[in-house]
Length: 114
Length: 114
Image (cartoon, rainbow over all chains, first blue to last red; front, side):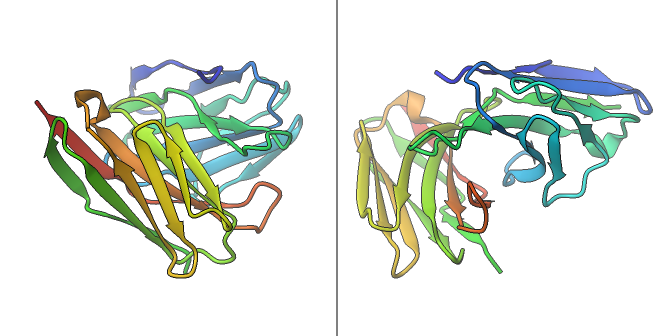
């Protein structure tokens, strides 16, 4: 069982609101990722971090921002939500010391912007 | 263009039957290939990971095969159970970075009927 947690699991917010999706892992992993996934579609990388104070944009352009102040915490923020942001957001982590190179995913955060 | 294609898109089988899911990729250079199971509304869970030198790997009733020459992989599920109903995602990693960039397939939606 992976020790990576996302909150909230489900959220409905109005257009223009600011929202932060939380992601925490207790495995001491240095690498963390945020993916966006629409129903029936593949995962798209939107942000990643290889350690504290390290953040990079992923392949899919996103209006969200991330921060990595602590190893275990990788929150994603939308300053002004729009209906186009409606999607599932998945957080993941892994460790360079994991010989199996396993990537652990959180349960996901379903965001609906109305 | 690096891509991961999965087939079939969806599959319905009866409980107790076997099935095989396919994954073709064009990712190069190749590092490893993973199969994930994603239950509806949940995050993906790792089933297997195979490197270039591995031809087959099993995890309980799940057996994955890899042909790195033809760039094809399959996931065979034996004696299916109702709990196998999920999306099965093929993920291929290249060697472009410390971890390797990940390329996701769109998944095969498997439904097991009683």
